Length: 311
Image 1 (cartoon, rainbow, N blue to C red):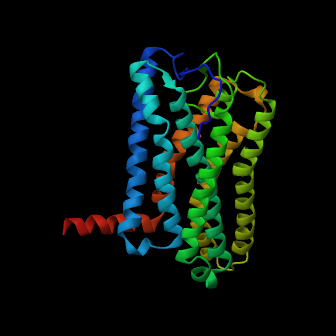
Image 2: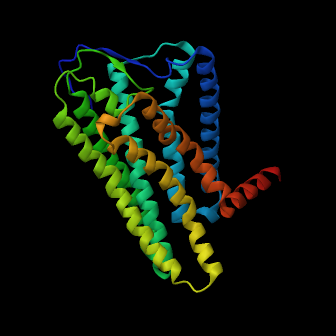
Image 3: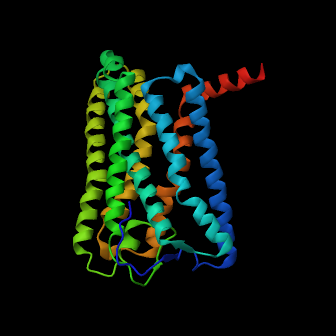
């Protein structure tokens, strides 16, 4: 994954939140710990509900189950290290450790981009082709879609991380971020990175813009189908099945697009930390709340599971 190069840097120093006072850092530690616990519990609840309740063994909830697993992995790439840094004030990370963190971060972020596009396609088929839904979205097709997303993400993230860490890093070694993200790391390379940045931009377009356009096309067709429904109640029900996914897409893609597709000249530590906070920490926490609080079937499944445990 990380090729050998002529780097003299053996570790990086993460700036993180070291510019804040110690009381504020302790406050942040408490905030991040609470968010992490809520995220773990929220996604675990969805995983358990979908696994144990046979009424939720449908394509939509199969994808939601995969999204929850993905969110658990995604937030665990960054938060434990941040919590450790806030407590110990030791902000170093080894060269290999930084590469590993970046690889898994890119892997899970790319997988989420693809999975959100798959979920949009599922909603498109459900609303635009309801009579053929069970045929088109068979169990085999659903597994193939998820597996393809993971395989593509593994290969792309491996190539991207290897490409970035094949550059020479000979100092400075201070990363202006709280984790090993692409822009602050590549800016430390000892050679001209103009070509590298072009390649990174192309990658970002492939994993952010293209899936987003597919989602947009799917929902344009979904909207047209909803508007053709004569019943107001029917339109409301059809839209409610898409509302949670639309909100997740908006949260994830808006911050991701601003972070990775904006001009390099507009990068700043404070802005990057704030944006990263939303797509690396807040989105994994909010997704289970969005899907469970707005979803009667998930809440019903949880009630049935709890009731069966009391008997």
